[in-house]
Length: 189
Image (cartoon, rainbow, N blue to C red):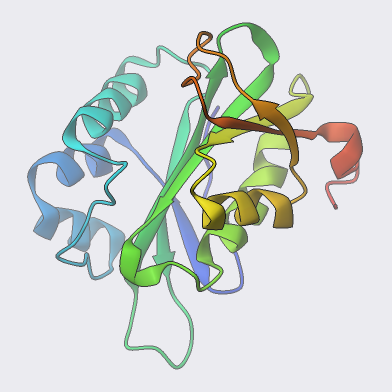
């Protein structure tokens, strides 16, 4: 999947290139320059550890997953002190279903509970469904992550229950799905 820039009301979703991912791994000052945004000292979010970033870099540069895409979420809204990196999110192929895309996201603690994840996911959904062969988007989260569950509910996902181990899913997580038909073929929920 070729990620394109996405603009929402308060966010610029900047496609993660190999250059951006390399900077994220090795030089946060460079990452800041490339994004034209402040990179908080707490970056990256806990879920985006070095191992995950390295895997994203590999996937982006080697093009091993045709549905891999990642965006850096930069807050850019009037009345704030400037552009700042608040989170990230992306997609990957579902192992067992070529019509399904997996979606994941993460927001720095200091920017949680402000609607950024909901806004970003709402922006990502039309980009994902712009691929004609994709009929559903799937996400998983742990039952105790109430804010993450709320993001998925607000963006139209339906809970499918506890996920079994396998197919790249972590045992004990809750599965959520958004079908193209439920979302609407015109790209609006």
